[in-house]
Image (tube, rainbow, N blue to C red; front, side, top):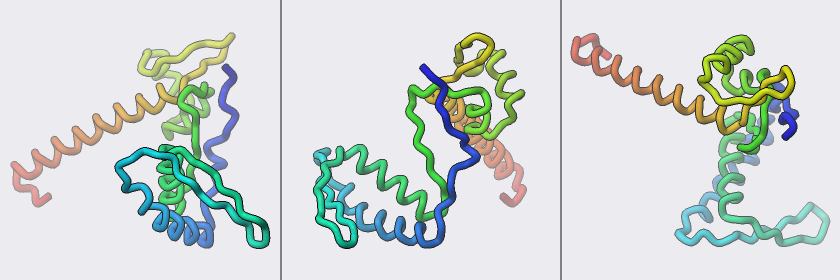
Length: 157
């Protein structure tokens, strides 16, 4: 499996015009997401002066599209990474927002599963995201404990 060829630092930030379009599109599409039935949705695509075409989109992809539009409306760049994509150490470090040497240290401590291809390490995207989720949960738990202690000590938080 080849390494995923993307530089996370090159993700494009949506322009103000794109943010506005994304906000309006997301708002309009959201009403179709509240359905109980997970049936595919039909979307009509039409360029300014061209004939229209109907595209059938799975409900899960439609939800993902709406999530992308919501993030764009907030000015965030969005990147999709297949969960089975293999990342280089630099790509994984960029995704975690840590230095590459620190990531290598985590790999050597077996904190994140990986494999070696020759002298290069490869990490599955879902393993990186699982690690990130676990760290985020640990941080939130610690913050909750600190907030509880601050309240018990009447520190005004």
